[in-house]
Length: 530
Image (cartoon, rainbow, N blue to C red; front, side, top):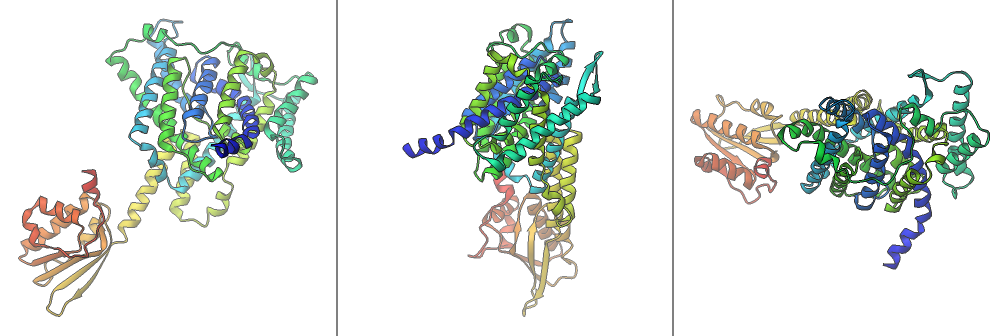
């Protein structure tokens, strides 16, 4: 126990400082995503606090940061707009539909954890992972470009002239500090130090630059100041809990749950690689779901893992749950007590931090390895990167996995072979090599010449594997063809499950199957899934 405490106390300083840095970086992100979703900034900030705190305490990946994200916000904007249209003008009914949807989203995510669906993240191929990282880096970069705009007569226009040069100068200074400080000393956290220095310059010289406060006001908000999250009793008063409501919110909740889990589990995988440790995917599903349920009841817009803030945390030395807890609690302290001070931080400082995150996130090695990897993997990498930017993470990852699976199935289908020879007694033997499954059935059937084969035929599966129900059906059909031709067929080296299923389909096949003591012991998918 003493060793356990000492090990965590040793990294406490890094966790606390990285948590403070993350809290500062969370503010504009949560506010921006709240604007995207069409809700008040405090709804995004409360989500960042509650989701971040709960997942830090109970999640499956210490050091990972969760909060309101853009991937969820782009889905929520339609939900909020449709919900508002269902109520009276000014009633803001869409906000309460959002809360109920977030609660249902959390329930779906908890169920995913209960049924241990988190383990399927291990099936995501490496090219999909690299495409996800590259695409997300581009998305983070393009999201920062919106901060180079200002509100002029109700329209967002690009800043120009001295304002642009000043903004670029402060962004560059932030990046320079983050790049150079670790070369001088590793005692000070580079991101937090850069933010403090740039903020001190902006405030000390009273520079006319965009700040967190001006960003909130330009978006239509009133400021960061607020109280503790409160239980939203209005949900039960304004939202009818009936089948019509369920039909309306269920599709949104399912999409949000899928996007949230995919982004969280992909980020978990990435943090695992960076820290050379292993998180618990199913536990993360449960924690994310529980966090979203509570967030929905207490007026937050829900959330999931945030790759940018998670990488900031890891790069700053955050390794334990303490870093996420500090980030969440500090964010709440900003809302309660330090809103005026935080609002004076130049946006340029936070943009500079995020640009450094982009540089650290993007898999630059992909340019080097792209010409060296199989063409199918290169296509998947580029496809996932592009779809992440054009659509969203969920569509990109699902498309990448599907393409990878189809390529694998096609390549596996080409591997089936049949070595043929004739025994001294005239029996023709087909020795099958390679997996027999739905994709290789056509190639498998083409190996046999039922009409011209001799009276006695053997099919030997010692180097093959009958993988699914389609393969069993193909084998059953082949047996019937030989029987219809009046020829004697023996099938050797089938697994016990395969024998059982074939005999169950047709008891007379027991005479066709030759049972050897060295039969394979692999399992048939049709048996397991049935």
